[in-house]
Length: 255
Ligand code: GLP
Image (tube, rainbow, N blue to C red; front, side, top):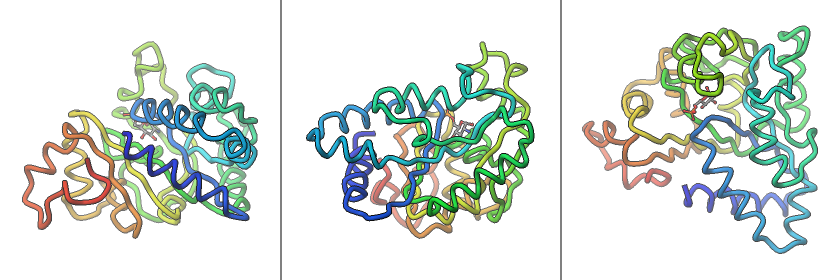
């Protein structure tokens, strides 16, 4: 995780020098908790002047939000982002953007969010976690590489995976979400897929070792010219066991 934080820290430094930097694309999920904790520590150690400039210029768009949850709801991704970044970095809510899960017309909200992202310049550096069924954001399988920001139905697998935040009851997990699509993600400047733990080993093998397919939405990421995969040894176990032309440990970004 330190290497990933080094990389983002470097990109954030470079961003300071850009006249009109593209927004960052951010993700939620337990995988990201240590990343945000370490990143905040790092940024707080910057000289005050640089830290202030970074804070003033911050603009990020999160991938997704549950339909039906207000930003104030503790289980919303908006609340997660406030805890991880908004409060520690003292960011305004308009600097840390997410779809509005409580919008009365979710389809219209998905369109509004997509246009806001486009108006802001599209995604620059994008952080991604991996769902146990191969989703990124909430792009559930099957899913083409061209889908845009929209309202989606959450699968049973995803609702089970995310039940921990809802008193461990999958029935408490909302049925729908608004998510940025593979189309917008593949247009990002740089993509970082972060995968940890043995529970993700089987799906990571499908993502990296099989042909890209709608059945594994994250497999489309392999079309991206600047994809980084940051995976720990547990998540990589089956990839390492698969005959691959090059040793995965020699691929930058894998650890
Ligand atoms: C949710 C998010 C995804 C995230 C996934 C992985 O479903 N919508 O963006 O990648 O969770 O979650 P975790 O990191 O908790 O395994």
